[in-house]
Length: 161
Image 1 (cartoon, rainbow, N blue to C red):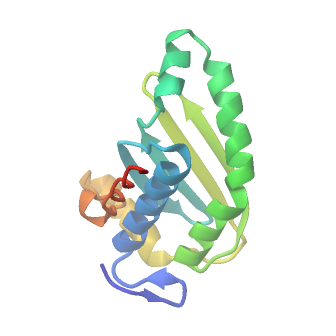
Image 2 (cartoon, rainbow, N blue to C red; image 1 turned 180 degrees about the vertical axis):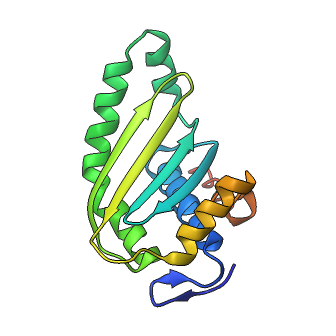
Protein backbone atom coordinates (compact mmCIF):
# COMPACT_ATOMS: atom_id res chain seq x y z
CA UNK A 1 0.00 0.00 0.00
CA UNK A 2 1.21 3.49 -0.74
CA UNK A 3 2.07 5.92 2.01
CA UNK A 4 -0.02 8.70 3.51
CA UNK A 5 0.37 12.15 2.01
CA UNK A 6 -1.56 15.20 3.23
CA UNK A 7 -4.07 13.07 5.11
CA UNK A 8 -4.97 10.72 2.27
CA UNK A 9 -3.38 7.70 0.67
CA UNK A 10 -1.65 7.92 -2.68
CA UNK A 11 -2.87 5.87 -5.60
CA UNK A 12 -6.08 5.47 -7.57
CA UNK A 13 -8.42 5.83 -4.58
CA UNK A 14 -8.93 2.13 -4.01
CA UNK A 15 -6.13 2.13 -1.46
CA UNK A 16 -7.91 4.77 0.61
CA UNK A 17 -11.17 2.83 0.52
CA UNK A 18 -9.46 -0.44 1.54
CA UNK A 19 -7.55 1.39 4.28
CA UNK A 20 -10.81 2.79 5.68
CA UNK A 21 -12.41 -0.68 5.61
CA UNK A 22 -9.43 -2.20 7.41
CA UNK A 23 -9.36 0.55 10.04
CA UNK A 24 -13.05 0.03 10.82
CA UNK A 25 -12.55 -3.75 11.09
CA UNK A 26 -9.58 -3.20 13.42
CA UNK A 27 -11.58 -0.80 15.59
CA UNK A 28 -14.50 -3.23 15.91
CA UNK A 29 -12.16 -6.10 16.77
CA UNK A 30 -10.32 -3.99 19.31
CA UNK A 31 -13.35 -2.59 21.11
CA UNK A 32 -15.95 -5.36 20.73
CA UNK A 33 -13.53 -8.29 20.91
CA UNK A 34 -14.85 -9.52 17.58
CA UNK A 35 -14.97 -7.74 14.27
CA UNK A 36 -16.90 -8.15 11.07
CA UNK A 37 -16.12 -10.96 8.65
CA UNK A 38 -16.07 -8.57 5.70
CA UNK A 39 -16.11 -4.82 5.14
CA UNK A 40 -16.30 -2.52 2.16
CA UNK A 41 -16.13 1.29 1.98
CA UNK A 42 -17.83 3.62 -0.48
CA UNK A 43 -17.06 7.32 -0.91
CA UNK A 44 -19.76 9.37 -2.59
CA UNK A 45 -19.06 13.12 -2.62
CA UNK A 46 -19.40 14.15 1.05
CA UNK A 47 -20.58 10.77 2.31
CA UNK A 48 -18.50 7.78 3.41
CA UNK A 49 -20.41 4.54 3.90
CA UNK A 50 -18.70 1.51 5.42
CA UNK A 51 -20.69 -1.73 5.17
CA UNK A 52 -19.56 -4.51 7.50
CA UNK A 53 -21.00 -8.02 7.42
CA UNK A 54 -21.06 -10.45 10.32
CA UNK A 55 -19.21 -9.84 13.54
CA UNK A 56 -21.82 -10.26 16.26
CA UNK A 57 -20.28 -11.22 19.57
CA UNK A 58 -21.25 -14.53 21.17
CA UNK A 59 -23.46 -12.68 23.67
CA UNK A 60 -25.16 -10.77 20.83
CA UNK A 61 -25.74 -14.01 18.90
CA UNK A 62 -27.32 -15.51 22.01
CA UNK A 63 -29.56 -12.47 22.54
CA UNK A 64 -30.49 -12.60 18.84
CA UNK A 65 -31.60 -16.23 19.29
CA UNK A 66 -33.95 -14.94 22.04
CA UNK A 67 -35.33 -12.32 19.63
CA UNK A 68 -33.78 -9.44 21.58
CA UNK A 69 -32.90 -7.32 18.52
CA UNK A 70 -33.75 -4.00 20.18
CA UNK A 71 -31.50 -4.76 23.15
CA UNK A 72 -28.59 -5.45 20.80
CA UNK A 73 -29.34 -2.27 18.85
CA UNK A 74 -29.61 -0.18 22.03
CA UNK A 75 -26.28 -1.46 23.36
CA UNK A 76 -24.53 -0.97 20.01
CA UNK A 77 -25.93 2.57 19.70
CA UNK A 78 -24.79 3.48 23.20
CA UNK A 79 -21.36 2.03 22.49
CA UNK A 80 -21.09 3.80 19.11
CA UNK A 81 -22.10 7.10 20.73
CA UNK A 82 -19.15 6.72 23.10
CA UNK A 83 -16.83 5.73 20.22
CA UNK A 84 -17.82 8.62 17.92
CA UNK A 85 -14.75 10.77 18.57
CA UNK A 86 -12.38 7.83 18.04
CA UNK A 87 -14.03 6.64 14.82
CA UNK A 88 -14.36 10.13 13.39
CA UNK A 89 -10.65 10.65 14.16
CA UNK A 90 -9.72 7.49 12.21
CA UNK A 91 -11.70 8.68 9.20
CA UNK A 92 -10.41 12.27 9.38
CA UNK A 93 -6.80 11.10 9.63
CA UNK A 94 -7.17 8.78 6.63
CA UNK A 95 -9.07 11.21 4.40
CA UNK A 96 -7.74 14.58 5.51
CA UNK A 97 -11.36 15.78 5.68
CA UNK A 98 -13.47 17.04 8.59
CA UNK A 99 -16.34 14.74 9.64
CA UNK A 100 -19.38 16.80 10.67
CA UNK A 101 -21.64 13.92 11.69
CA UNK A 102 -21.58 10.15 12.06
CA UNK A 103 -24.19 7.44 12.51
CA UNK A 104 -24.10 3.67 12.87
CA UNK A 105 -26.88 1.14 12.35
CA UNK A 106 -26.97 -2.60 12.94
CA UNK A 107 -29.29 -4.83 10.94
CA UNK A 108 -30.07 -8.52 11.22
CA UNK A 109 -30.59 -11.47 8.86
CA UNK A 110 -28.12 -10.94 7.35
CA UNK A 111 -26.11 -9.38 10.17
CA UNK A 112 -24.73 -6.07 8.93
CA UNK A 113 -23.43 -2.84 10.39
CA UNK A 114 -23.48 0.31 8.30
CA UNK A 115 -21.32 3.24 9.40
CA UNK A 116 -22.08 6.60 7.76
CA UNK A 117 -19.81 9.62 7.95
CA UNK A 118 -20.74 13.02 6.49
CA UNK A 119 -17.89 15.37 5.62
CA UNK A 120 -17.84 19.16 5.72
CA UNK A 121 -18.72 20.73 2.37
CA UNK A 122 -16.25 20.85 -0.45
CA UNK A 123 -14.97 18.50 -3.05
CA UNK A 124 -14.50 14.88 -2.09
CA UNK A 125 -11.43 12.82 -2.90
CA UNK A 126 -11.99 12.47 -6.64
CA UNK A 127 -9.77 9.36 -6.81
CA UNK A 128 -11.71 7.50 -4.11
CA UNK A 129 -15.06 8.58 -5.56
CA UNK A 130 -13.95 7.33 -8.99
CA UNK A 131 -12.64 4.10 -7.43
CA UNK A 132 -16.05 3.58 -5.76
CA UNK A 133 -17.75 3.97 -9.14
CA UNK A 134 -15.26 1.69 -10.91
CA UNK A 135 -15.63 -0.92 -8.18
CA UNK A 136 -19.40 -0.90 -8.53
CA UNK A 137 -19.32 -1.16 -12.31
CA UNK A 138 -16.66 -3.86 -12.35
CA UNK A 139 -18.04 -5.74 -9.32
CA UNK A 140 -14.50 -6.13 -8.04
CA UNK A 141 -13.02 -5.78 -4.56
CA UNK A 142 -12.30 -2.03 -4.62
CA UNK A 143 -12.66 -0.73 -1.08
CA UNK A 144 -12.82 -4.11 0.66
CA UNK A 145 -10.84 -4.98 3.73
CA UNK A 146 -8.10 -7.39 2.82
CA UNK A 147 -6.76 -10.19 4.96
CA UNK A 148 -3.17 -9.17 4.17
CA UNK A 149 -3.77 -5.66 5.53
CA UNK A 150 -5.20 -6.87 8.83
CA UNK A 151 -2.72 -7.08 11.69
CA UNK A 152 -2.02 -10.45 13.22
CA UNK A 153 -3.78 -10.99 16.54
CA UNK A 154 -1.60 -10.25 19.57
CA UNK A 155 0.12 -13.26 21.10
CA UNK A 156 -1.63 -14.69 24.17
CA UNK A 157 -0.51 -13.36 27.52
CA UNK A 158 1.64 -15.76 29.52
CA UNK A 159 -0.18 -17.43 32.39
CA UNK A 160 0.39 -15.84 35.76
CA UNK A 161 2.47 -17.84 38.22
